Each structure stands twice: as structure tokens, then as C-alpha cells.
Image (cartoon, rainbow, N blue to C red; front, side, top):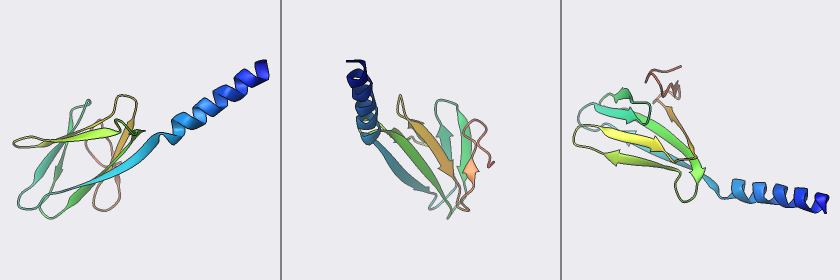
Amino acid sequence: MISWIRRRRRDKRRAREASWVEERVVLTADSEWLAVVFEPMGAVYEIQQGENLTIVFEGPTTDPGAVEYRADYVSVAPGLVGRMSAFDVAGNEIDLETGVPF
């Protein structure tokens, strides 16, 4: 009986991992610079004109993350149980707490 419970727990873990997705969103500054705010940390990263920023969300299929367009900036946030990372145009990872490349 105990081995069955352990096996069942392993199967639940595999099922949970299978329901996670990875989504990539590319933000591009077309005409002017674009400010991106990383929530909930509040760090700001500015994309220069003609450059882009890649945001990678990892989380459940129901809520991997969100991008919200505001009047003068873009807000990005991971899902409640997900993860988020960001990469500049050169492929350098951005520190989400400070808004600068590592």
C-alpha cells in the first residue's frame, strides 16, 4: 500500500509538470523608447528604439504570466506559481530586481 501511494505521488508530480508551459513574448520599441516594469519587483528596463526584449514565462497552462500595456509603459508579471525571465537583444539575461543585465 505504501509503494502505491508513493507511485501515485510521482504520477501526480509528472502530471503537474506536464501541465506547465513556456511562453516567449517579444516586446519591441518601434518609434520611441519603451519602459518595461517587472512586477511585482517594480524594476524598470528601457528598450531603445528599434531594439527588443524577450520575456519568458514558465507556469501552468491556465496562468503562465501576463503582459499589460499601459499609457506610457508595459507591465509584465509571472503567474502566481510561475517563473519569469527576460533577455535583451544581445541575449543577456536581465536581473528582474534591478533591471540591468547580469
